[in-house]
Length: 212
Image (cartoon, rainbow, N blue to C red):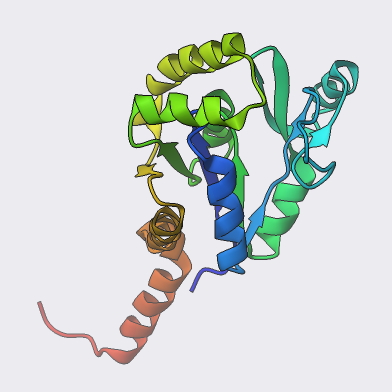
């Protein structure tokens, strides 16, 4: 069987509940490693350095881009976001499935570097529910909320480029569905190439030649 970990890219509109979903996935199953992104935005209340994000100044972030230290990066609502390369590659070698929670622009960058990565888009049950969740945070102004809703319109144009869509209505149910998607993705012929080759070779050794 194939033992190397797979790369799973999870995107979704701001307010779709990606963060809560990812936390529940990591807490429920032990085969995943959640990549911590770097960002140039200011920490929100309760966010911890190295746990939620690696918080950088714009200058520090641009230096990381220059040095090739990021797997992908993008700008979103005036701030940089990116994925440190070293962590991802290390965890994949260890056989863990690495989850990247990133925006659409970055997800498509990753897909080019890792064609076999699995892209999953998290959606809210409705646009009205999305606005309700954004307003319920109580951390953003009406102007920022409007920008995030506008950004959702732009991001929705890229959903068809993903492998799966999951609707985050109930976190527990959605977590189970997400886990099932990832496990199913491991069973594709490309990811089982070594196993298929071994069975083929064993069959040839075991079966005697027959006349056509």
